[in-house]
Image (cartoon, rainbow, N blue to C red; front, side, top):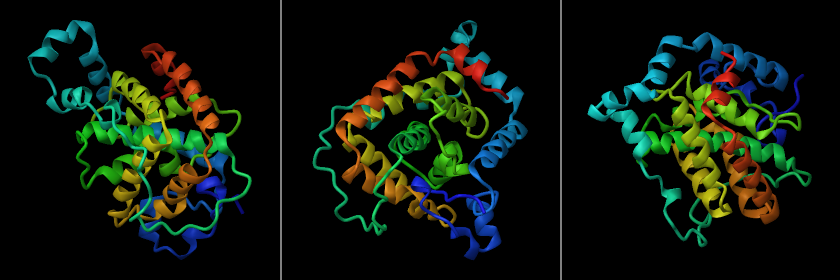
Length: 274
């Protein structure tokens, strides 16, 4: 059998009792028998199979300087609106009083020895996907928001496990790959914008908690993806509130900032491996 999965690899046997169609909608393989290394290989293979070179090239050229006059005349309004939207984390909001009160979150006690860095890398990819949805919907999540976050996040879509050998650049590149394969806005520049967004989210635990609770509400409304709350999101909310230390957060944010600073167009394109 494969090792556990979900938050801190603390779950197993979850899929055994699911209907086949529900299991397939949440996850394409049986996590109880397919381990992390094979899941990563299958994830990358799926991304290659779904890669649309023509769609990507169209998006790339639309960003090129010689096409600037065309974009100023109109272009794709959805793309322009997503790029220009000012998300809530760019405002100076007081989130210090944000709590879990009123939210029914029932989880088992978190494991005593948590893989903090692995969990933060997983949170990074979940929130990259969340940032995409906030910009794409201009802060007004819709019926597709759960699909968007689930699909763009390697953690939620393939139960990715980020180990010590994976640096933050690897996480960001994996997110960029998925953002160039699946959603409506497929743009290297947009992926780089999202990397900066998620860096800003890591300013505080309050920011992170608000974002995680937004993800939780989106999944809760979904008939297909609600189980992701049990497997990941609920425990992330408790982890942020009770276990993540200030020094751990500040150190990780500094690493994100360093990676984002080197996340140029050439770096992204060279690292796509598609």
